[in-house]
Length: 270
Image (cartoon, rainbow, N blue to C red; front, side, top):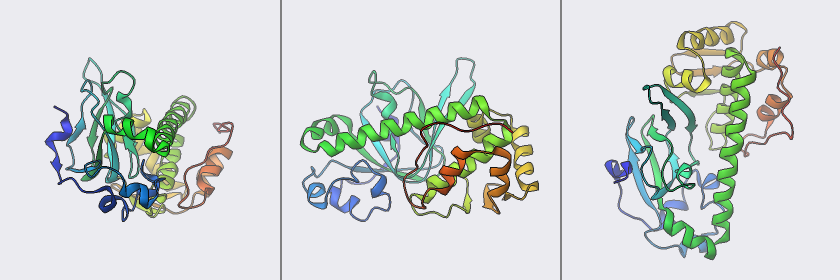
């Protein structure tokens, strides 16, 4: 049984009732469908599922049965090594599609767990595949989600290899702020949903190193930080020590627009 069944399912609703007023509709797999097309979807196409902080959406090795659009809240993807070591590989934010890791061989490759109270729209993968022939835009949205995930992974690998700890943190905070701005949140003043253990794992640094990096960003006048609360004072000091045309383009993207990336990475260590 999929781990999501341990969550709190809401009664199936017609997609129109779920989608029309959804604040993350522009980021959703159904976002490109017209209202008429949404109305024509099967009544049980979407089932909403609420998860409390710490609940698993699915575990590694479980069969792929559904994909999930994250309506609100936050999730993390995590791999557990044979020695018990845990590695966070991704933080999912509202509008993102989850479960795509299981497409290759029909089984999930990571654990996905809620790091805050969250709600997802659960879509049976078999139903989604059937409907892509009737609504090609669904296939396009699925392909775009896969491509975005791949691009994000490539950028993250680049960061892990080429940036030092403070640069990794600075880059993460600006990218995170831009991501939440696409669904209407303030990118200059926000609460991080992840704890420092998870953030350090994702950035590939020790917790003590992460704490020193936060202090360094405060000292140069870039941020103010209290626990998980982050307030950007100025991004200029970050850009000065990163000297990053790549990072500038991400930061200067129009607020509320989808992230854009230059053709070539131009990050360099100072």
